[in-house]
Image (tube, rainbow, N blue to C red):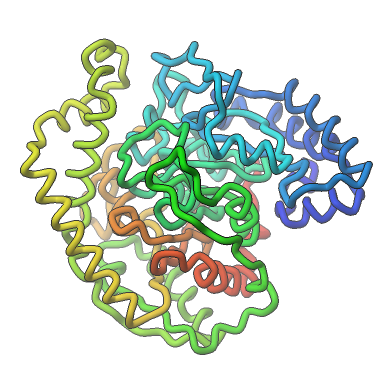
Length: 467
């Protein structure tokens, strides 16, 4: 495999800008990897290799003429198949929409195009983004590049596998209860869920409009910031969109974390895989050695986060897909259909109660963040389970896969707080483990600083799967 495809986006952009490589050479290298690995991984629903190759030649000419426009110029990217792409099929992971071809781009797709990025394909996903495992009966299940018998995590499963194995430089996913961070953790890469509203949701199939967060999956922390800087910002077409400024990359100047207070919620270490506890504990020690102050904290209302999130998500998802339930119920992947049908039984009163509790939850989270700068803990309590498995064992206790995979992620969707997952080790059977770092709204810079300092103090970013 060409080592170029596993270089960071940051490094690739330097090579492109300095004309050491061309966009066509980079795109062709990724195309070769896709031909080799896609039969095993099934990361994509639609490939755009011919269109991408043609665009790469145009971009190569632009850069050759010194018309270099951004850090993403000439970079091959993948989009989860719920971001509308003009003239290219967008299915939301269901064959119900197999012939749907949008006339306009989503805001994210338009901004990537304007930045000079090259679309290499539309990525596989859990149908309608309604599941954290990466199952898809219509287009085939997604396979983890560290062990193809294991799931990728979801719902942005194709995004996770594609970036991890080197099928693209970066990918975009969406995160409603962890769907960027879950596949990032299970596939051994970086996944960044930004502050709610930072990235526009216009032209993105909704799951739960008040919990959905688009976000990048990349190989390094700095790569995620490069992508976010190009696609974030106010969009009048998205009512939840907010103003933002580019995030400085000067966190790359050093790895000193002196004066930074890191909170470690004790709830994060209840019922987790021993290998994960060991890896995360070691990671926290690294952060301490870098100068951070480690503070044990209580996570307010943590035990209510699943109930709050589930009630809101199910009600909003069912509302969005209500007509589809009436007209195409039999064609919806059964586990997804059952979740949508369950949402029909959530009363207005219960939904409003969940929103009121969400307000209290968020208020208490703001108070907690007043005591520390970031929160740190495991992204997941388990490593990647077998594809289609429903339960797993944690310390001889049987737990549901869906509940386990979303347990540590849901709080930051409820509150809209930003959170990143970075690799922090492997289990005894060589499956990746993720470290989650979260902060207050619009603290992406601080989160990136802590995550980057940890990344550069370890070697995890240099370890890649092989098929």
